[in-house]
Image (cartoon, rainbow, N blue to C red; front, side, top):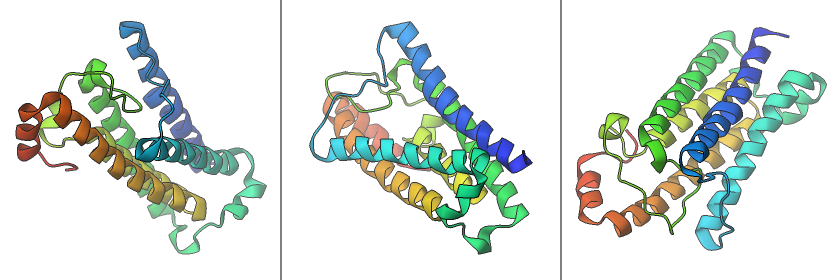
Length: 199
């Protein structure tokens, strides 16, 4: 197994096992809330949730084929002009830096973190830590990480993953802003006026 294959495998385990799995387990243990159990939704929220799930599937397909099914990897249409060691190294760096920042931002959210928006819950407004510099440090860090993943394994499928993930998160942010405005009112509007949406 090559170093890049090991990096791709470790990324997959870190993302699904750490960023999603361990964080969800910790929240459930403290609060009894299962952040993985999203209610079936219609409209834009439903489309965003399904798109997010599809993006995770694309990530897994790319990494699993690269690590374990190398003969199938050419079917994902690699992008030749991005296949350079220095680009792969930059990708690995960005991918894991993004995951690290995501983990810190999740921790700073405490019990307010959720995988999907639930309009029936009222969670505290988090404005400290990384949230002093970005209203959405988890999502900003994930985009950095997803860009890194694409540069690690540049192909047509990972490019689709990156583009769909960005637009899905951009729409999700706007939905969450409406939710936060509704439950926190002036406090959120003041925070929104002081801190940028991304970075």
